[in-house]
Image (cartoon, rainbow, N blue to C red; front, side):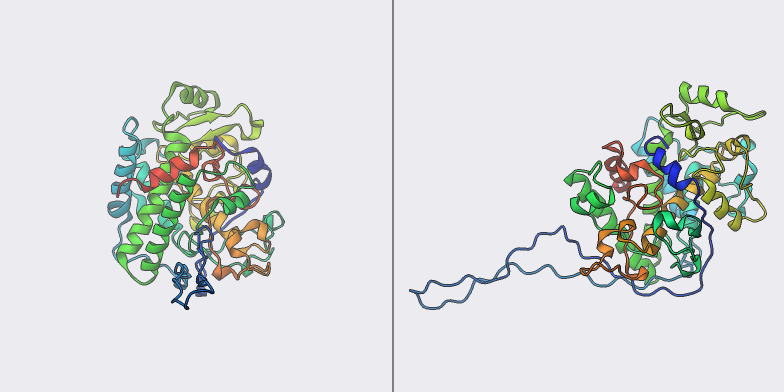
Length: 414
């Protein structure tokens, strides 16, 4: 990651997450009221005492409170015969590549001859050798609710150490929170607050996703497809922000040559970036979403979650840097994409299950200061590191412009 790493390595280097599907149904999730809307006075105008009483002029109609979101569920709601590759990865990859006409990195077929064993862990991915395929499939995996295993770092995020108490979550299990400059000032810890124009775009994205979520949970196939496409576009746009615009530069080639283990050669489209301002253990960043090849660092959670999902194709939890360079720098980028999607749902898991208002969105705090029940909470990607399990600097607007770029890209095209 190029934009937010030093604090991440302190807090997230210990994090452990695994994926457990829960059969229990979730309770109703209430959509938070958007406190950013302006409501005028609803009182009437008092007539002058010297004139006969007149009918009071009506004040502005109060903004109706949003209805409750449909109940979240812990079972898969993937529609029958849904094909994530034809319905999501190819069309969405084309849209995002069109936004980056000078690069077009998502749809080219990659060299499976240079694949790593992790690239072949899931038979559903056989022959699906585009970066767009691997990203969209990772999103599909995280559309399924799972119970985050964050007890290992519970004290960092004010979580219960007993992970059995956690509510399962996914990319669509809970509604997205709307935001205001005030809520972002809180969730981003007073840093890099985006402009009003960017905030409007964030809320457009949230409203679209929440609408698709409602449709999907009601059994509407098209709603599910649109939700999958929008999340996939979000992550594909992020891949350009993180790596794809500089993946094949001479600088990337030089860094790869510096760190390459025996027998490894950097595949096309796989970025190697060295951040001179980071400590040695987090200086090297690899692949679509720029992860560090350090098993004790911020990919430890992804390794453990991967191992539970693919017990026949595991990654050692104490893997060497050389081994992890091969995994994170594979030609098809399967683990890299998986880890990125897992980071998003991990961040949401903290916001859903945290016992302190510090670690969740302000809309999840009642007027008396008590927290809403986990099933009633909304979630947001825009939380500063330390408040939630957030890996990606662009979600936190760390460079002052990256958040607008990501959301604008996500809203462009079909």
